[in-house]
Length: 246
Image (tube, rainbow, N blue to C red):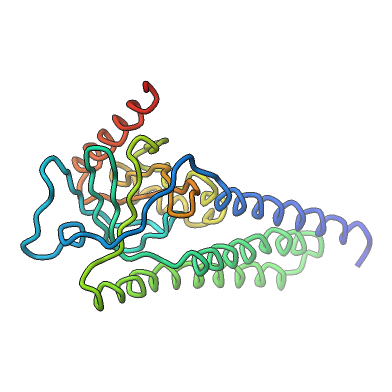
């Protein structure tokens, strides 16, 4: 191996890892102005038979993407007069972060391996890159499939899901569709983003809001219909505009 080959591969590796690390750090370090409350979901928020909501509340059923809010699987989002509550299976904070970092590290190793394939003109490096992409997919898909079942275990024991409740006025950047990956995930999930974007079109309502650690995280909820998506997004935008005008 000559020196220029080392330099090319090293530069690509540094750029790839640096870009990925910046995205993940940004994903986990955004501070919020408020703190969400973790509490036991009510019977209605947990979708239990025979339960009713308080007057004036508007409830929506949705499926949560595996974004920073860490909900997984089917959730229920309830818009109250001054707060928003999201209830459903949720991934532990440490486990979610490890999962994201592993995906990021594996994916960031692909560009330097591809660079090695080019400078060496060796197909074995290309095969290695394909293998890394497949490993990244297994990690991503495995975690995404595991989280809902893992998060539902407490509900089986307690009869209620966990709910995360935060002031409606601190919701911002409400989008429908491609916005689900805003905040860093667009880089971490780059190989799968086009596929998820297509699924999210017209149905996925996403926004930034506080979590229980006073961080601002992304919530992304795939609604049961485009009508529900428009209605929920409208309610959330109204809350954001109310705050901006206060």
